[in-house]
Length: 293
Image 1 (cartoon, rainbow, N blue to C red):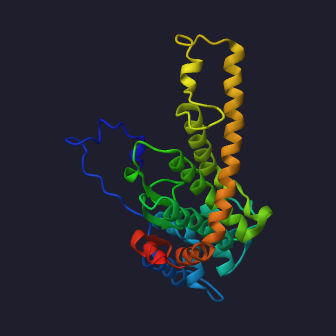
Image 2: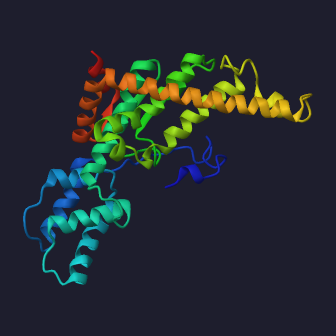
Image 3: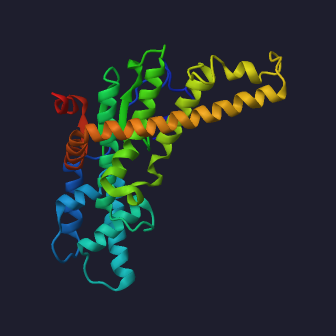
C-alpha cells in the first residue's frame, strides 16, 4: 500500500518488479456503493446522487463501506430512525477531513480546489508548454498533495533565469486564482503551503546557487560558507546572506505580480477548466489542450 516506504532494493527489477497501481474509485464505482447504502439501510428524504458523488471523490471502497456503518452508528447514538442526506454528508465530511473544523461545506472546498488547480495548470500550459501535464484532478492520485501531475522529465537540466521565474509564477498561480475567485480573505488558506515552499526554493536556488540575480551577482553560496574553501570574513559572509534575502523577497514579489497578470489574462480558461474538473473529477492532457485550440 505504501511503496514509497519500502526499501528501493526490494522493489527493483529482479525482485518485486511488478507494481500495480490501484486508483481511487471512479464515479460509477462510488455510485454503486452509495446506492447500496441508500437502498439497504433505513433512509428518508431525497438524496442528490450528484452531490454525494462529488463529496466522495477520492474515497476508497473501504471508506465507502465505513460511511454506511458510521451513518448507522450516528443514528443509533442520537436515537434517529432513518439516515438522511444531511447525516450522510456529515459522515462523509468526518471521514474525509476529520471532525468538522471549517465553516466551509465539502462542495465549497471542492470549488476552491478546482479553481486552485486550474490556475496552476493553465498558467503552466502558457508559460511552460514543453512540460507535459498528465492530468488535473479534484483528488490526489499518486501523492497526497499532487492534484496536478507534471512530467518534469520534459524539463531541460540547463535552466535559465526565465525558466526559474516561470516556475515561480506557476507555483503562485493557484493561490492567485483562488483569491481572484473567492477574495483575499476567503481565498487565502493554508492549502498553498507546498507551492509556496517550491517557489521559495526555486528562487533561492537561482539566486544563491546559480548567480542569477543581477544585484547579488555571480556567486554560489556554497563557496562562501564552506569553511575549507572560504577566505572571507564573517562580515563579508553575512553581507552575502543579507543580499540573498533581499533578492529572494524581490523575486517572490515579482512572481506574485506575474502570477496576477497571467491569471487575469487567462481567467476564462481557468474558470472553464475548474468547471470541467468539478464535473469530471479528472481532466487528462489531451482534453486540457483543447482549451488552447
